[in-house]
Image (cartoon, rainbow, N blue to C red; front, top):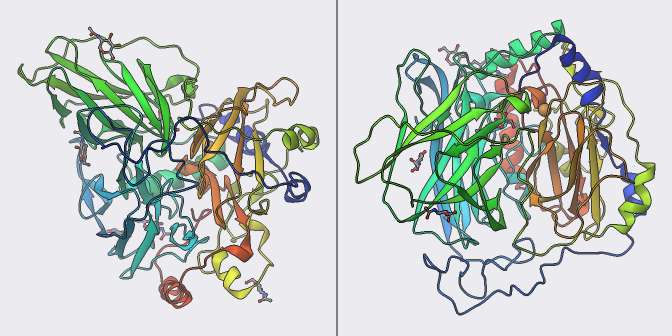
Length: 592
Ligand SMILES: *[C@@H]1O[C@H](CO)[C@@H](O)[C@H](O)[C@H]1NC(C)=O
Ligand SMILES: *[C@@H]1O[C@H](CO)[C@@H](O)[C@H](O)[C@H]1NC(C)=O
Ligand SMILES: *[C@@H]1O[C@H](CO)[C@@H](O)[C@H](O)[C@H]1NC(C)=O
Ligand SMILES: *[C@@H]1O[C@H](CO)[C@@H](O)[C@H](O)[C@H]1NC(C)=O
Ligand SMILES: *[C@@H]1O[C@H](CO)[C@@H](O)[C@H](O)[C@H]1NC(C)=O
Ligand SMILES: *[C@@H]1O[C@H](CO)[C@@H](O)[C@H](O)[C@H]1NC(C)=O
Ligand SMILES: [Cu+2]
């Protein structure tokens, strides 16, 4: 999203972002004396005798189905699914504008889709074949149940993987649906280190064919690492970050001069197609639509929802929607559109276009008209999880009045650079690549540096409530917030200042997902149950913002954390420490 005015940047830095208020741990500890676990009970019982197929997509097998809340229960197939990826420093040219430096996975952009089935064990071997950067690969939205060491966040769950090194990530596929994986080493993913994750499982809507992942993102002609540095310099001088140059749909588009090519999709009439939409942008909100065809939404992030229809869909960075498209229109060519959302201050003047063609006609330039839409930068309000999951409200109602919603001041990163960091709660995050949080757990050392921005959560079984508030003095810049290790409940989102007495909060069946927007000039209220011991990053998914420090980590039940293999962990750290002594480039931001 664009920070269009000079003042806006500083105000956002000093007020908007810093206003974020997180329930302090001591107060959390006092609430919820009894242990309440999210209820997966409903009339939608998991059915054992029902075969998964085009008209029975809700079925699965062995007593699991779309009715199974995968936080409570998931299958174990005993199958290990190996994948292998190699990251190289190379060039790419996705829209015909010209070759530029790209950091790619297996020489592909986007990287390969890694697939598995619900209940499998994923085993991905990652090799860093770049000469001048470390990396760490994060599996976005994957719960990492009892495997927090596999979350792939350098400075928290591991040291960066040094050039030439290899790491194997092993984790249970406890969820199903669609997500993505990306580098978590500063803004590196913006240079191409992204790919899709597809975990087969049941769904709430039926379909004939799965068209697979469909990636939407903005594209810069400079490298993300260069744009990130410029965004930093601009921030210090009081200016906005650079504009993006194009939007890519599934990795391609025409450029402003007409070069490049559109993504093309061929469909048959009279079918239902599943499409797995994901926004892999670093800075822009996008609105997507297919002319003349409504989108039936059946999952938001990994969470199945009661299906509903929309004409246009707003996607924040990191969010996914699984949709079904019915090809019931006149056989013709139709535009699929992805536009930067001006109402989210995503003001770049670019248009993502792709051509969808019914296979009985020739591919031609469509003449179709875009749907109109209501502006407002809000996520679809119809999202209702398929599982009935009330969140207890009494402790929140009792304590919310004491929440510190005041402003705190921005901080300078303590790594010796003149870096302005934006803070959340009382401080902004700045990780130590050479000594991640998990190393402290190995050492039993609880003297975490303040810059780790680490907060304990409630004990297992109890609830955590978080309100993130932006200041009214700040420009209305929305921030897509992502939490690792949990699909959180979205209790409410609103403009203005959060007020416990007037906020419309949904405790009965709130949307549950891993990424949600703090509305520009407003607030986001979320809840998550302590049910996954680990150390979990929460951050804004705008790459420049998290690089500038907009994040914190929740330390959940340290005594119960299943730590990774210590020899492997410390071996990776020693390799990193020796590489970094003579590395060409320095860490110059939060590191994540
Ligand atoms: C990629 O290669 C270029 C030029 O060869 C070099 O300057 C840059 O540091 C390399 N980047 C990484 C991440 O290896
Ligand atoms: C990563 O490599 C890029 C060049 O490709 C460079 O601009 C950046 O500073 C490097 N960052 C670190 C921390 O290694
Ligand atoms: C988009 O690209 C992915 C590969 O990255 C491919 O698997 C998928 O089929 C493509 N989707 C469409 C609709 O073309
Ligand atoms: C991706 O998310 C960013 C920020 O959350 C947003 O500005 C952009 O419009 C989104 N793109 C799409 C295609 O939804
Ligand atoms: C096409 O399918 C959509 C989604 O099911 C439906 O809303 C619409 O009425 C159908 N249109 C026609 C012409 O059948
Ligand atoms: C805890 O970690 C800090 C930072 O690395 C270090 O200075 C301190 O000596 C450690 N304390 C113990 C008891 O190991
Ligand atoms: Cu942000």
